[in-house]
Length: 443
Image (cartoon, rainbow, N blue to C red):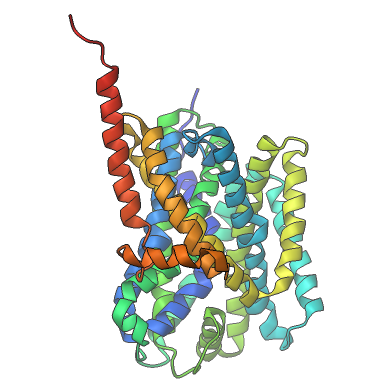
């Protein structure tokens, strides 16, 4: 018999979901966006919240609707296409980009302020230690609700609340002057920056982690699972929004602390040190390491769960170990390198993920959702591939990239949007025509 969750378990599930999403990118990108936006913070942060909070919430809702993770979302794809997309996404959100970034940001904000100078050896040792702890927690997925939701996350929330109080009681100056690009396109800059949190991609892989945590409490009825999954996503969305607003505000008012920051890690480090003094290093270290650790645990768990099903030569625990070791190795390239190589991959994957989520949510209204998905993803995927390869410096796509200038919203980073919408409309019309043709003739 299916159980129901107690209020404390619902809150713990929501806090666990919040902690899974709140990782490296969520901490370093909002301050940098706020710094660039200055007096234009409101428009920029609204764009950021759309891709950094709104789309992940829709992703969790899509997972709740289909009752599973990425495999069920891509069930309408041809089998090989679904496998390729899923493997690429899990590699990007796991050992290639997102997971290593959790260790590197923890190193730069959690350890570096204490040791003073970075070195390859210290980064390597820290990465190994970080992923050793993440690996230990990920090896027991049934305990995630207890370890992450009820133990680690409340500590994280308490420290974040302390930083928020410091931000508004001791601002480090007035909002700075916005850059020219922020004045002209603050909203769209924020929209694109929200990509780099990877949370929309995270929603597609965390969905199954959240659902499994709910199952571990004895809840098996599909409607109940969907309901609790959505509530967890909503709690996480509220928490993330508050964190982004605070961090964006910190960035916009920190122009007196630093002239030309390389990334948001520098901004938040200097701010916390200015407000909390000698205790600032400890406050920041606890915040970052807890936030990044919970995300790393979720990513390792999701990757292990997926790869153990599609490539059963290794068990869940075997794949978690492999992903942890690969993440620890790749983390040694450093933060700026990781950020640089991540952008082209996100330009390719993100629009496809957005289209997948939206079509999934509209599936009950569609006669032939598989056909509509094909009509949407064909133009979106092609355009995203061209943009990603161009951003990576691949020369042979330059003529195709120049043709994209004739489409609307290229400057805003949404050149794929109108072709995707048009493809969806054509897919709906084609589905209706097929349905009408297939109707038997009445004699």
